[in-house]
Amino acid sequence: MIKTGQLFEKIVEMLTRFRQEIQTSSSLGLLNTNKHAENFMKRILNLTYNIELENLNKDNANYPGLDLGDTGDGIAFQITSTKKSEKIDDTLKTCLKHGHYKTFHTIKVFVLTTKQTSYTLKTITEPHFSFSTDKNIMDFEDLLRDIQNIDPIPLRGLHDYIKSELDAAIGSVQGKDTDAQKYFLDVVDGMTKSKMPNFYIFQAKISIASENISAPNILSGLSIFLNKQAFKNQYFSVFTEAARDSSSHKQILYMRNPQATGISNFFHAYSLVIEPSSITIEKADYANNEFLTNLDAEIVSLLIVIIFLSRYATGNSLLSVSIHLESNNRVFLAAQNSMVIRGLFSNYLLKSPYQFNEPIPDIYTSTLVDLLQNLVHGFMAEEADRFTDSPFLTLDHEKTVWHIDRLKSEFGIDDVSVY
Image (cartoon, rainbow, N blue to C red; front, side, top):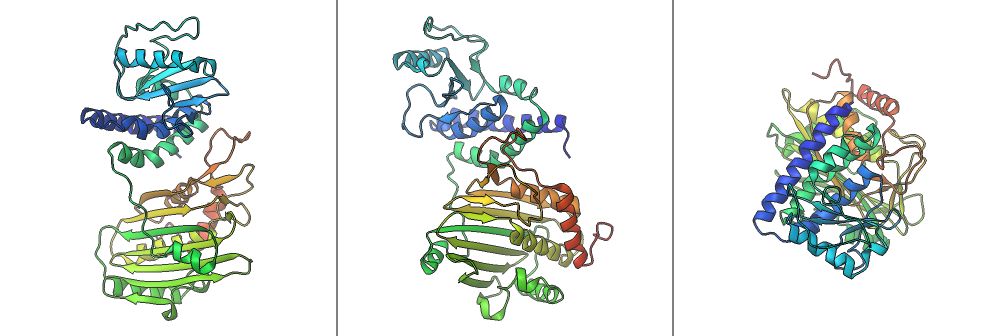
């Protein structure tokens, strides 16, 4: 478990990197910097100050003068990379002109770069609202001082959020729009064939980072590995000759199109893709309503592939995992019969699309627990939970360890004999 001091150090490191990217983009004249940073900063400010800012531009494409606002607490922010006094004056004049102070009694400016040491403002905001250059103009130095004083639970939630979103936020600031994730399963075709309007898809690509092993060799090893286990029919039913869609020395593809389940208006589809030094698994669900998942099928198949590749590779090869979850409807995380969670007091919804990449240096149980914790972080609380200050779900550590150890024992593995 990372200690509070280490969490804060990681937050400082990540936000410093983000600020540096903002400064670079601003110096290059990329004018959309503020726009791309708004949603990222919204969640950070909410978690730090326990407020509920919303993007004021979501309903009004250009809400004059302000970007984020919490009407309940009456606080609003402008997010800007421009630090000059003239910019602050323009903001205050706009707030006076449009009467924003009637809704927001506290108006702040957050400077994404570094604010000036002093400001000379010409705009008089009294008697409508108070504005202090010391208290109402902020930058990351001010934010980090406040973050250092928050409680451990919201600090953990803040750390996990920044870690999960930082790369995407920086990519947006740099003007790099993330390409749509490529799936082997065609979800549009799947909705057409199943006649269901909604999909939920899980994809995991597990790779051996330090070796080059041919696809035919991985196929041969996986066939032997799974033939010895009772998991094949339940978790790798697509891995059959009947489901083989195509094969070459570079790629062997197994595909099972949407099939009806025992539940009406609910269909499954699967794919398994073997490529040099990697295996990709996909599971897609199709329905005419929202989705409910306990992630067990996804978790077991993911862990089995990790165990196989770690045993098949030679030496102490490093593995890497890339995971994507996506849906066009709401996906709820269910506690029923789950391997990793127990008894939820709030609804946890998939933040779609959710994706992350993670190195797997070994298959110790603690490493795999951390991986699964990152996976469930894709689901966030729909509303505030009186039992926790964090919007993120913490898995049941004891339960998760038990299931991982039990699965590893089926393959004759324990942490003593890993290497």
